Length: 239
Ligand code: ADP
Ligand code: UDP
Image 1 (cartoon, protein in one colour):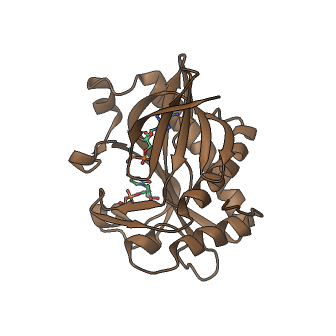
Image 2: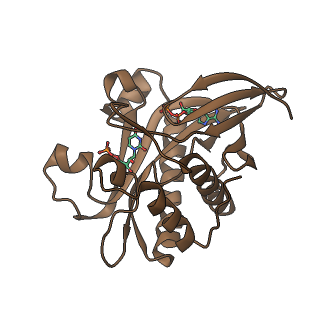
């Protein structure tokens, strides 16, 4: 496999073509952003930590029957993935209220959500990723009914698997965001699952161990991501 030209540089990752038109190299950079890119910083080791964290979680999800874009981890901060036509809709499940749902609906942070909520957001930085519903996705052609059903089913299945995985490590999975894409007609889980795109609290103390440490200037951002990994039995390499 040969790495070729950069196709896209997002806020946290860069994507490269390869000599195989069906495969991409995904490079996890140290860039960290929040509030639609308005707050930005470089955090040492973050790219490597998120790449390895994502590879670990994607393997767990794959084993639980969720088809993903992951081919293999290539290095500390790069992975080989299938090249998908991305569906521009972010799927968010919440087990506990935090972040935008608290602001939008006036719910106190920490309120248990039973059953968990499921929300869709349009992936569009310029518009601030507005919340949408299935009818919008259908009318504007962002996804088909069948794709929406698959995305919802896979997102809830991921919640079951990951809630237990984190609980076993003494953590609460508060909420998370998933992105999907289409590969030769099949909906696959894409992008990443890392502490950048979920909320994780210590089960006992409710200490935040995710990107809220960056959003809220709590310090020790990457150190907390590493702690989450350690609690799941991971070891990281930075070479
Ligand atoms: P953003 O675009 O939100 O700034 P990133 O910095 O994470 O995000 O950039 C990664 C980009 O690659 C995202 O736009 C994501 O939707 C896209 N992407 C993720 N997985 C795949 C894939 N398998 N095939 C094609 N594009 C992908
Ligand atoms: N999220 C994400 N990317 C986005 C928006 C949200 O990864 O563009 C994640 C976020 O980290 C959290 C969950 O989705 O784990 C729900 O985010 P929320 O709607 O509360 O928005 P926030 O207040 O985090 O901006």
